[in-house]
Amino acid sequence: MSLNLPSPAVALAIGAHPDDVEFGCGATLAKWSAAGATVHHLICTDGSKGSWDPSTDTAALVVTRQGEQRAAAEALGATGECVFLGWPDGELDSGLRQRWEVAYWIRRLQPTVVLGHDPWKRYRLHPDHRHAGLLAVEGVVAARDPHFFPEQQLPHHRPEALLLFEADEPDHVEDVTGFADAKLAALHAHTSQLLSTMGIDESASGAEVERQRQAFDDAIVARLGDHGQLERATHGEAFKLIADL
Ligand SMILES: [Zn+2]
Image (tube, rainbow, N blue to C red; front, top):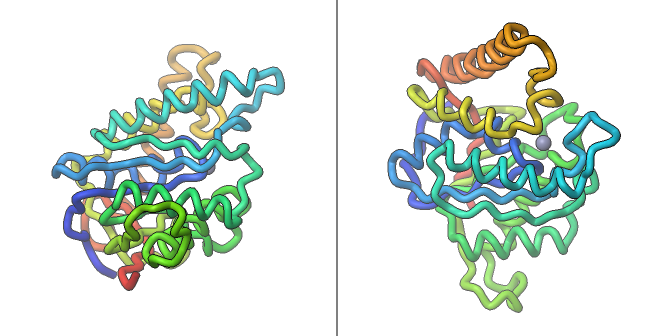
């Protein structure tokens, strides 16, 4: 188990949906932002299936979720770009076209560290998370080698490290003590997801909403505590680190 990469100049976090990055590595991004890193988000899908209400206007939901993602990035202190690839939610593939797009953004944004879903996490159900994870891995490979996609006419770029969150076999911890509040604030910025992913039902009574909100926050902070314990930190986020890129 290793602890703490050097704070990168530029970090690029790749998520399947708006909110995945905040769940997976929000506190780490907040820590690096505070240390002066430029933090970028790359969101692969449009988030259009992120509602349990069959009558939801999904086109409006896409716009809402982009705004929420930008607010979440701001809550983390991230000053970089929020890039939306806009693939239909639930239908993300890790094909050549998608890899082309991810490699393009890695070359353009030139991250020192790339973060993404662990595509090899066992018993993972959501295909978008698996495909977004593969795209982070395969996008790094394509971006680093000059003969991949030369028509992009961008200098090839080799990040120094790839961190996979939701790791099947975590072997690296970022000590994020002091950044739990930033992670929580960023998660709460995804207002349209309060019910479906955070279990907070705003149609309930005020006291009940407050109880649900506290239960969600407590679960997030408890997980930071569990991950931190791997390296004797109060709060941590655990990853699979791939440093041989
Ligand atoms: Zn997701």
